[in-house]
Length: 226
Image (cartoon, rainbow, N blue to C red; front, side):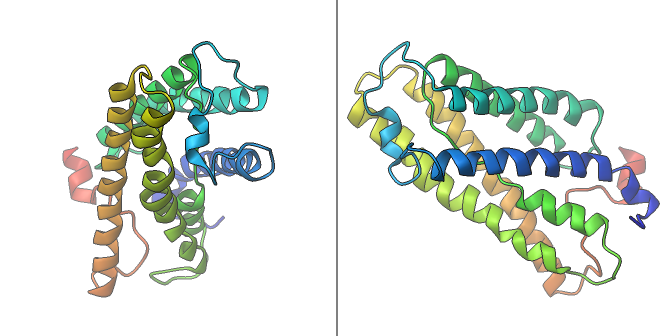
């Protein structure tokens, strides 16, 4: 792939995440748009006829199993395998919160489906393997998709359903504050990572970067100190 030595160590991490996110994102698209589930167009429907101990459909259970196993592995990978970055502590917290949400929502049948996105990793892998120089290569134009998913659809679809619609359908729904507190923590993390992108764009516009570098990574001198 004509990788620079400093990028070669990062490629397996990014390639693995690209593979998983592409598969899980595709499966999420299948569940939301190619089945009879109305979750995307009618998010409150997640809580229609909700009751304790209700059956979880097999296709949704598969999604839970895949996501739960991935984020369980990601906790270990972030701590011991992946390149350590400025946001790695936040990333660890993200994986713990996500794994907790997945496990508890399955246990209490709060099966609100969401689509993980692969655009960010697609951009990062294309950056690592590019052959031509330049601050922005074409595949990175896909990156705004992650903002659409995380900062628009996530609050509009997920938070609206869990914070408001759930009480309308099930007034005494268990663990209301627990689940919504964790979802709000995820929202804050999404805003935190969005600020990193804003910082990167600002540096590009001011001519402070000559190539697509990950602003979350430590500089050489900082890495020595770390």
